[in-house]
Structure formats: C-alpha cells, structure tokens
Image (tube, rainbow, N blue to C red; front, side, top):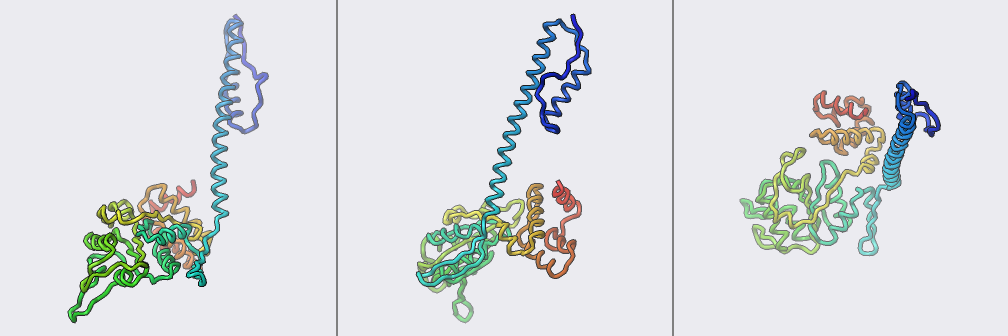
Length: 338
C-alpha cells in the first residue's frame, strides 16, 4: 500500500481565463486536497484515467468552441450583407422612351412589380405600417396606370356601385379600374363583409362583372392587389377584427408576404438613433410575445416630434407605448438591457 497526493505535472497549460483552464484548475484543486491510499499499480492507473478524463473534456470543449465560432462567423456574414445592401432606387422605362423615377422603395418592391406584370391578382400580406399601400401606388406609377383604392367595405355596393334616386349610376373606384384600366388596391380585404368579397371574387374569376346598369368586361390593363394583415384565415392575437375568407376567394390570388424594411424605415425617419431604438423595442415586444404593434410609423412619427423639440419621454409615450401599462413597459425595457 502507498499513500500519495496527485500533483500537477506534465499537463498542457490552457490560456489564462479560458473555460478549459478554469475546469482544469478546479479538478486539480479538488484532487490535491485528497489523500489517496491505493496499491502502487492502481495508483498509476488512477493517474492515467484522470489524465484521460481531462483530455476528453478538453476535446469536447474544443468541439463546442468550434461550433460557436462557426455560428458567429455565419451571423457576421449576414450582418455584413445587410450593411452592404443599398435601399432600392427604382427607375422604370415606359414605352422605351420615358423614365419614371420612383425614388426609394421597399426591398421587396421589385418582386411585387414583377408579380403584377404577369396579370395575376396579388394578395399582399404584411403587418400594419409596413408600406403596402405606398408600394401598390408605386406599382401603378411603374405600370403607367391610374391608382384606385378602397378600404374595408361592409356592402357589395361599395364595389359594384348603385343607381341613385335620380336614376343616375354611382360608380366606384373598383369599376373605374375594372372598366377603363388601372391598378385597384382592395385594402384590408380580410376585414370586409364576406358577401362583398364574394362579389369581388366573381369579377376576378369570370373576367366580367355585372354592374347595376350593365355587364362590363375586365380591361386588359386592370391590375389587382388585395392587402391584408392576415392570410385570410381569420383573426389572430394581433389582428382580432379580421374575418375568415372563403377558400374560393383566396384561390384567386398569388400571395406575397410583405415584411418591415428596417433600412428603408431608418432612411425615411432620418434619425438613426431613434429608429434603431424603435426597432430594438419591436424585437423585444415580439420576443416577449406581447400583443402590441410597433410599426415603422413609430420611427417616422417619433423622429418628426423629436425634430420639433418634444422630449424623449413624451415621444415614447405617444409613438411607442400608446397607453401600455407601466409594468409591461418596464418588462420590455428590462429585456432590452439584457
């Protein structure tokens, strides 16, 4: 029998402050405080096993460090690409001789424009304040046609029109675009009366529409965009006033999910510090699953108030929190600190 103390000998030194170093020192500290009674042969085996255990831990830590390093590199590449991306400045050549400068546009604008040029009906799904209406107006300019618009409707007559008491036809924005050409935006279609949407569906599917006075064929330069906050499947946590749409109506559209363009948001706001703060609050609200909308309007409106000399607390209450209780506000701010 022999008695001994394990001492630090011949073990590879790790960089000071590294996880390996801390683990290594903790193990040795513990072992050095112990007396070991064992057979001489067993003593050597114990040292060997302990060295092997430490080496295995070192290999595992090296592997984990390598994985983390690769993930960091991926994120860095994505950030670099975002920094390089320029805000789209669109110029359109109409009829080979006339250019229209559309100025700064959403990063998905070209996608939307190309989809509309196919003649297909586009269902634009995006959160409040993401620029759906502005983009649709710009598409109309790019195509060289008139822009026509209607919001959520409670009656099919807002689409088809009607004959008034004097026997005169009261037309609608939809009929003007459908009969004479133009881009028609049906905004908040998912908040509209279902019967009205069914009438709209008939006009899209049959390429003609029965209006109060006569039947009208769909113009060859009629373009249609429907904008919504949901995919037409009914209300969700954020948009509680939305209806479930008929499957046949949804089938008439191709869908484009429209995201916030934070680079464009920052550019329009013209106040980087405020816009960046708003975007961080937005991510915090989403991460905490709080039912509250923080749209680019908060960046743009807040920047205007700041420029006019309003203090920061007032601007945050007016543009960000909008009546939110203080407990939830503190929860969001605490999350930002982390």
